[in-house]
Length: 269
Image (cartoon, rainbow, N blue to C red; front, side, top):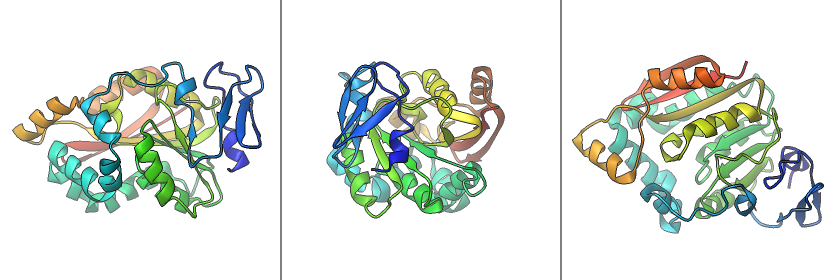
């Protein structure tokens, strides 16, 4: 495990900003919380304020499926985006390649220092691309699904700068102001309290750090509206999101519309 990753952590139990690695354990120097660090990803969920989730939405249950995790990148994600946001989202700007280019360009990874956080990383699609772009910097992939992280770990073998963490996006286990940028692709609809997630992202970004995300806006069809309702998917209008993020403290909002979805970028002043 990259020692630079441990330096980013704060204790998920007591909030103390000094964690140390001892052998196969990561421990808090204040409350003595010990976390296993000998697996493919570090599981911090049990120590977070919410702990393990007892009630799951339809989307969360599907993401916890090993079958869905294995086919997520090639089949599930493209089909899901087409269904909910229409073909304009999956085909616009060159499909996934174009979406990835927009995310990476908006993060400006080649011009700014990391480390970097891929929030709600699923099976690590964007995490690997980010790690390849900045091989000398730590890229943290965070998700709540162990099935997704198992797949992400297998597919990120050979990337020495990737660290994977299981926890809740509402309570990020990182020190204040440590990340140069946060990537958050297609996950806002899955959060119980987006405002708390936004506040946590603002907290862990350093001044000048960027937050780039993508989410769903208008429904592409009546089938998309029904599917979104069944899956419990919330939609965000760009003007609504702009006002929301500005009120929290982000600046320089901009977005690119892709069918029934959009990619947005803001900065911590």
